[in-house]
Image (cartoon, rainbow, N blue to C red; front, side, top):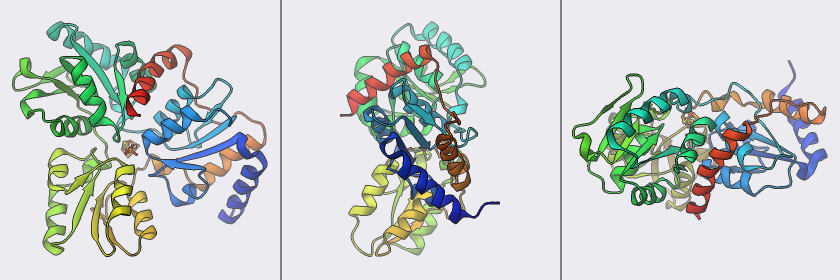
Length: 349
Ligand code: 13P
Ligand code: SF4
């Protein structure tokens, strides 16, 4: 097995050799051993914006998960290749909604409510789901722009179908002042809507979730508050609503980082999100008492598939002129998905 020091040296050499033709982006949940090489780092919104704005790089090495690489492919030019260093780096939440289930759901919902329903999807979804949304006049959201875009969507249509993360959908709708009775839950496995008063429903939530963020519990917050009365708790909106309600703040990974940066020296803050990011914040801000809300929760195993050996392999492919693991969305899917993504990018400015 090759020594990490050799892999590091090789990655540096190949990056230097290719210059601006090669661009390496990393999501905030990536491991430090990967993030150290990133030309740009960001949350899902920033990474989508970066992809849309980069017209120079012929090869974009995407250190993140499959749906992010698909999004980058859709937003970049035909002459640019997006490479995912490990094809197995998916997202369990994105996999919770497929086109077959969505077609059935849509049929049932339009039969019940008529055409006055707009689909919107969290960026954590497959290109096929985004394409369906784009084809039906809908829009993509990220955890950074969800309140703004869901508020816009509520002005466009009487009802929304929000895919695939029920928690981001619920947290955003409640934040915008909707009553719990105005939310319904679409049980995809049973192809039916669960709602107390179906006629009052304004936002129908798909029943997907993130396996990392659903590990956070109110009891963890209560225990920390008992031990450290001064503690502030910030969590990601993919956490369950009770957890978000028990926290002091919630926001996307970019918002969490901003919150930590702005906190006064010595502030004690517990963070409920992926522990690769929390670990990095602990190291970057030694003057603040930052801790993981649950130090025992796993960081995302799918994000973690991208590691030093996979990254070195991906760059070896570039150096050798081989195709590597290129992510290419077919033209028709990309066309419709782009409608939904472009709508988001325009609304996010
Ligand atoms: P953001 O970085 O956009 O907050 O997304 C979090 C996430 O779970 C990505 O998979
Ligand atoms: Fe998907 Fe959750 Fe991992 Fe993000 S953290 S990639 S939502 S499984």
